[in-house]
Amino acid sequence: MEAEKVVSVNGIGRGARRLARVGTAPLLPSQIVRDEGGLVEAEALVREGCGLIALMNHFSMRDSLEVLRLLYARPALRSRPTVAPVAAQHAGKAIYLLADLLAVQLCPINSPEALAELGPDAPPALSALEYTQQAVAVLGRAGIVPLSPQAGRRPALVRPAMRPLSMLMVQARRKRVQKIAILLLGLGIRNESDYSLAHAGGLNLGRVYEIQIGSTFTSEEALAAAGNWRALDDWALEQLRPLVPAAYRAEAVAPPSPNGMALAGGAE
Image (tube, rainbow, N blue to C red; front, side):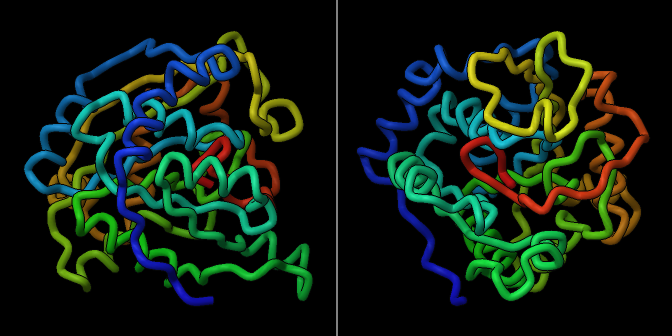
């Protein structure tokens, strides 16, 4: 499956993004409960030409939309091209209509777990390399890429075998895309202690999401802190750990979700 061209943001898309947070608030309530200033710093770096990776934990189908609603509240981020992965089996008409309205480019992908479960019935999708190339192209235009180092919905903050941040950063280096900022965002549900997929993995309509805004790093700062390219995902998870609910920091690991990524509630 061939990658598509980067989607530009027209006036309708910018207007829809501006209204997204207010218009969806009754169904998707959220509150910022911690702010270390990373969002303001990220906006400043984007104004200087940096692409932005919004790095977040991922437990539900609402996560990526919640992150984009937060980002699009900032004027400089509202006008930036955005690419987000979506589970190919979740890529229905409603999700694509929402993405078109917000001028978000969706990249359908199949996780290894989905391929193992669905086999030849897996829907058409981009390969990991094709998606990464699309994401790098958007970063090169000072655009936005929501990303979770968990590479799928997980009931706890653990790293899978995949290393999505490392893969993305290595590809960006090969394409000579050097100006990249990484914003850390922690998500949780108010008064929730069970983040299993069955209990918290859906859209969670009406439930209050609590957002913790962490710091922003340049790609050079992140690499220096991690020590090497391969260690970036482990570094990212450790940076996210204090930003997520205590109940989500548990070491217990459930089998990875075959559902992959979904814009209608997550970058995945």
